[in-house]
Image (cartoon, rainbow, N blue to C red; front, side):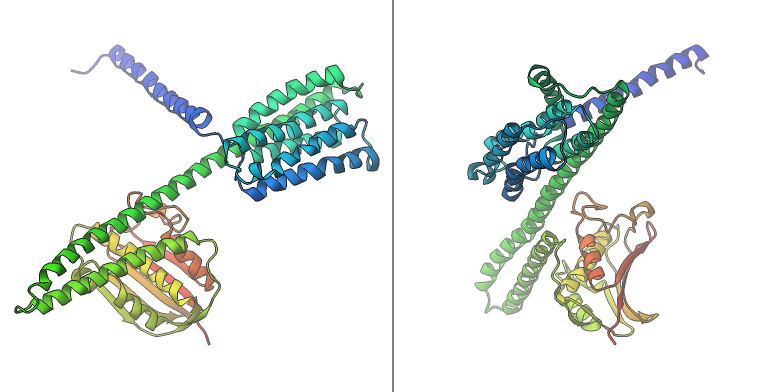
Length: 445
């Protein structure tokens, strides 16, 4: 029986608030995370050099600004004593106990107090004492953005509000008679400063999200590496037990052969662990790859990489087909480019392992040749493929199509190494029909 219009209407109305409530709850959780739960960082990017630099700028900058605004380009109001006192606060930031441990609680408290006094409080007070004006409006705008750049956006927002109130009180009690500001000028200045505050909050909030994402990616990468090393270590332990048992029967028929096979398996596991370690070492220096170059012969490189790859079993090894159509020589780092091929083969084996069938010969094909005056290395697998909407992102750092086992740095590393050789790397893929990675390199004459 169909429901009546009244019943249907009541049912639809009951669903709308639930959806809105869910959205509202997500918004509340997000606000709680960003405003309350996320840890406060009084010093953004806390390094001794950064804190000392700010301290030195405070110490020298305020007396210099007094000279600029009092002597060179006179403003209605300046105060040498106030400038010297503010400048002396820079000594606190230069002090080794503060600058040497910028992440400590004491350093954070001292930094917050010094920066608050010299930026929002002093600038707000001087702005009022000078009756606004273009110079001080510009200074206030710059101060707001600097304040959000050096400290947590929540500290900056509260600090600005408190400083505005206290600076106004100090101006009323002790300030000079300032040039009057028209209502239009006041509103104009407030609009400019409000824009700066809103942009400071937006940029500070997005930067905080980015820092937490990077930390999460780093911790995830550490976890993945620990997992990848734990597995071969456990296998090596079992192989060690097997070697001990076989050593007692080495003189029996077939004993020597079984022992040799275990030794070969052990060496393969060591190569696998070294590959994991090399990958993480290279990823740690992703933004500063070595500039050393050498002449690399493509065929020799691919033969060695395919031969030395730490295959997990014989079927995986037999699935690789290396086709050398035409050899070429290019300039790059042999070690780094070998790691590029290793990464691409590892990714291919992962996607092949995810398929329902065991790997067959030719499931991973590597072609080496020349086309249009460029050397080409094409790595093709018959795995699950890559969705079209993800293909433009896979070379970006920390992007991974498999969050469970991928750290998202392998293909970013591949792209950087290929680009450093003045080449290109791209992907062609159809979901369910495998993927093809194409590397094109300039050939040495």
